[in-house]
Image (tube, rainbow, N blue to C red; front, side, top):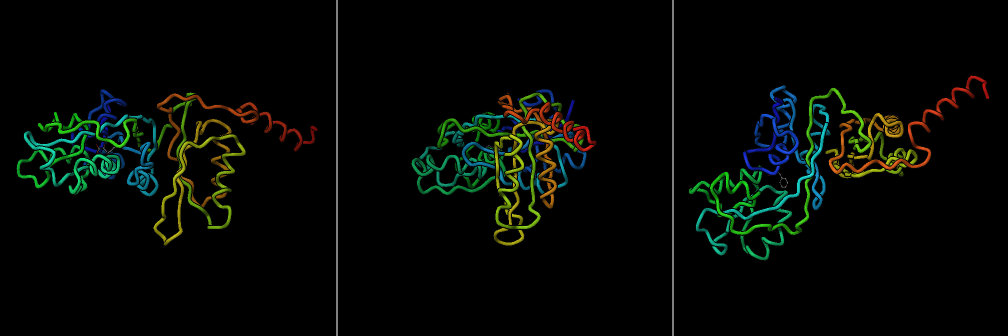
Length: 306
Ligand SMILES: O=C(O)C(=O)Cc1ccccc1
């Protein structure tokens, strides 16, 4: 039974993703995303589940930066979780009494409308997770009046639901990934995604276009592109890319080789089955057969067999 580290405590959205991805796994709740990933690096856990992106807010910065800068890890699976937020209070608290709210920053940004409309004047204080916020509010001595959390956290910590489904949109989805120590890449399925992080060799006009061209000319479609500061001054950025397909596909492999040539560093984060099972569309001239036929042709003309 694998042991999976995740953003705890019990009752987080991440825990729901762990239960869906690996129902039989032993769960190791951690205080933050970095600690969950470090548990894998140190061998304390066999893997970890972490949030990677949200359909409303984009990338989860802590996860993106940990995967880019920390000791390398491999993404081996993903899961799409629809997220629904509840306002949880100690039994008896009324909406008008709520002055101090606590939650995870990603939940705060997705519930801004409700907070402005229904809790105007309330301050929102960040918590390490939505369930940590609920656990804190459950303490009768807590300075906080309410937590924004999944409804399940209310059941776990004995809180009341003062309002449900309080997100600004009711179709928000968070993509979670399961990571493992570097090693075996999952087999291609035909409906895969490949993630990577690219660092520019030198900043120049068209540098991003050059990188994108490596994908475009081989018919590789991107599903996410995100720039993050390198920390080395204003204007210095590196890039996260998610592409359709698997590193075992010729067009994806060649795009990665091309990027490797023009980047100062290209970190492969993994090829894994897509949660939505959307099959990769192969553009004419970019199938594995097309690539190997072209390689054979080149070998022939190089050896004089025109
Ligand atoms: O705090 C949680 O419950 C998490 O799992 C992180 C998170 C927060 C908000 C939306 C999705 C994931």
